[in-house]
Structure formats: structure tokens, C-alpha cells
Length: 247
Image (cartoon, rainbow, N blue to C red; front, top):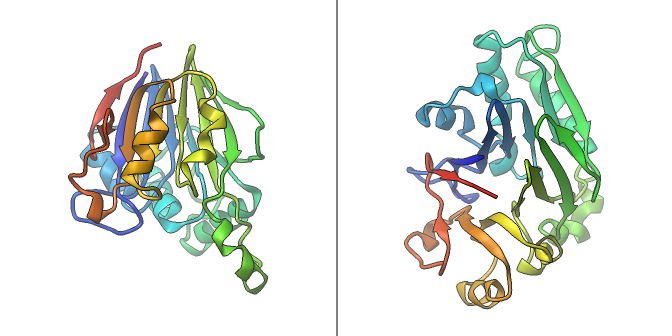
């Protein structure tokens, strides 16, 4: 299995990084984790074939995790894709993304392929070809809770993903509220952890990591002020980087 970093930036755009998007491939099967701003262009720059994507899992509705979705669909439409595309995302975001595609003229009868919407729920397993994912709610969006009554379209759902493939187990943290959000996912060994590098201190990270059993630790979602910082015993993600993952 191979992980390719499509976009490794935080929510603040920077010149050398696109926003969150990660390409997992196992033979002919490809799963895209998140689809932030710039994803379509970044896939082209990485010399990857977007037609190979079989499924997309979107963690939450901050724009740096979903805003590349409409243009990716447009690119697949222009490329005359025929194969269905599966989308794993929360029910409320499904409604939002459908509306976004409608307003972008990517109508269901026009795009040329089926979007298979799969609403996800906490701790439930979903299968796609050789991949299985289990979404786990985290606390990333809970700070918005007191104002939610003013903004009823939002649902505060933010997920980390447990990903299994051919005996390999990995975790994608997406954005978290605290490192403890993913403790339960690391209670057993993981071959890889793709961890956002923004919402905790470097000191917290070093102490937390000491008790974890992870073979490959990859830090992504890098804010400008953390460029060049030392996350000990970790790979620092760069756009276009490919990492082989073995059981």
C-alpha cells in the first residue's frame, strides 16, 4: 500500500502546499481522504490519474477539507469518467455538497457517472474494494457549539478515520480538538498514523507519542508558523511525497 500526500497545508493557504487531501492506493484501489482546496491541481502535479479514485472520505466541513470537491468532480466530468464514485461523508454534508454541485452545473444527469453517497455514522464500518474505514467522532468542532443555534445548518460532526487494508491498519486523525481524541484508535498497534500538526503544542506531542505504538508517524496540516519545526520521530509531509506502507 502507498500513501501519497496531495495536500498538506493547514487552513491558511501557502504557496507550496495545497489543503488537506491524501491518496491511499492498494493495487488498483484508490481511496482519497479529504478533498481540500487545490486537490484537483495537486493530483495533476503529483502525476496521478484522478480517474483511478474509487472513493472519497471527507472528515468535516471546514473548507480546507472539502472545497476541492466540486472542481474534482468537474475534472472527472471533463475527462469523461463512467465509473461510479463513492463518497463517505456525514448526512448533513451530503445535502450541502449536492447543493454545491447543483449550483456549479455539475448536475447528476450531466456529469456522466454516478455519485454513490454513503452517509457515515460514528464507529460504523464501511467497505470499499480492499479498503475498510471506520469513522470516529472527535472534538475538533465542539468549540462552535454555543453558537450553533444561530447556524442550524451545521452539525458539528468531525471525524478521524481508522483505515484497514490487507492486514494493514492505519489512522487518519484529520483535525482534532486534542491528541486524546485519537487515543482510543491507538489502543492497538497501527502501521501508520497521519496526524494533523496544528492543534497541539510540540511539547504535548512529544510526551503523547512516547506511549504510542505506531510504525510510521506522518505529520501533516502544517501551519506557516510551524514550517521547519521538529516533530521528533515523525515524517513531515510535503505535497507530492509518497510513502510505502507495509504490514
